[in-house]
Length: 462
Image (cartoon, rainbow, N blue to C red; front, side, top):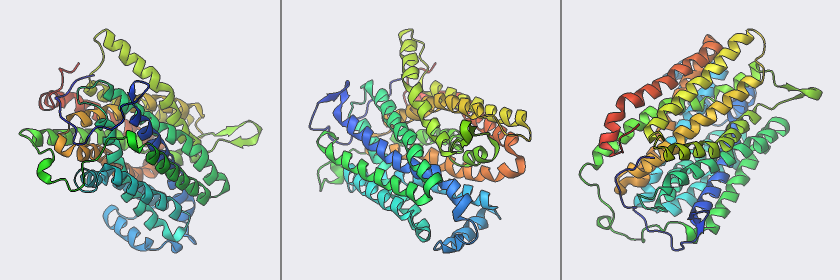
C-alpha cells in the first residue's frame, strides 16, 4: 500500500485500548453496526425497483401515493416522458444518488456541531422510521426522505470513526477499512435472502418491516460498544480549538474530489446491479431450478455480496504476497484494475445475451458476472475509502470521508439516466454501453496518476 502524508485525527482516541484480532475493539462494534445498517438498507434496496415497477407505479396503486404526481412531473420536466420501467429506474437512481450525497452535510454536522456519535444515532433512528414507513403506500415519499436524511447522518460519521481508531501512519488502516467494507457485504448478503424472500413471496411490506428491525439491532450494537469508540470533541469546544485548514489543504481537497469524480464511473456501472439488472434477470435469465422452483431475483443480490466475502481473504492474501515481492499495486493501480474488471463483467452479460438471442440466458452467465464484480469491488471500494481517509485534511476529515460517497451520488443518478436506454437499445448493447463507462474509469486514473501522486503525496505508484 502507499503511504500518505500524516495528519492528526480530529477526535480523541477511545478510552479502552483492548484489541480484537490485532485491531482496536471499537472496529468490531463499528463493523457489526455497519453490517446491520447495511442489512436494513440493502434489504429495502433489493426490493425497491421490483416493488415500484411491478406494484407501486401500476394503475390503481400509484394514485394512493401522497405527492407522487408532483414528483413525476418534476422528474419528467428534467428527463422527459418516461415509461413505467424507466420512471422506476430514475426514481431509484435519484434516491441512491441522494443517499450518497447527504453524507457530506452529515459529516459537517458530525465534525463541527453534534459530534459523530450523536450523528450516527440520529441517522440510525431516522432510517428505522423510514423502513417502517415503507409499509404504507401513501407514505412512500416521506419514507424515502427519512432514509436519505438518516443515511446522510450515519454513513460518513460511522466510516470516519474507523479511521479515528488509528494513527495516520498505522498500516492497519487499510485492512481495517477492508474489514469495514466486508461487514457491509455481510449485511448486504443476508438482506436479500431475508427481506427479499419475504418481499417477493409473502408481501412487499414484510420485507420492508424486516429491514426496519435490522436497523434497530444495529442501534443496540452501537450503543453497547460506546466505550470502545473514538470520543467526540468536548461539548462547547470553540472553533479555534479544532484543527484548521493548512496551506495546501484546499488543493488536496480539490484533487480528492477529482479522484471521486472518476470513481463515479465505477459506481455508475455498479449501481446497475441494483437498478436495471434485477429487471434483466426477471425478464431474460432462465432461473428455473429442479422440482419446478424458480430462483428469486433478489437472491442474485445476495450472491453479489457473498462473492465479495469469499474473495476478500483471497485478494488480501494476493496483496500480501505481492508486497513481499515489492510488487503490490499502488492504491491508484488497484482502482484502475478494479474498473477494468467491471468492464470484463459487463462484457460477459452482453455476450451472454447476444448468444442467447431471443431465448433466455443460462443462469451461469450472471453467476460468473458476480464473481468478477467481487474482484472489481475489492480493488476499488475499500481502497478508495482508505485513500480518502488518509489524504483528507484533519479539519474536514469526516466531511471528506462523507464526500467519498459523492462518487455514488453521481453514479446513482447516472445509472438511473442510463437506464432509459435499456428498452430502446436492448440488453446486449445496453451492457456494452457499461463496458465503455468502466473502461473510461481505468483510463482516467492512469492518465491523471502523476497529479494524484504529487498533490496527495503518495509513494511513486506502480
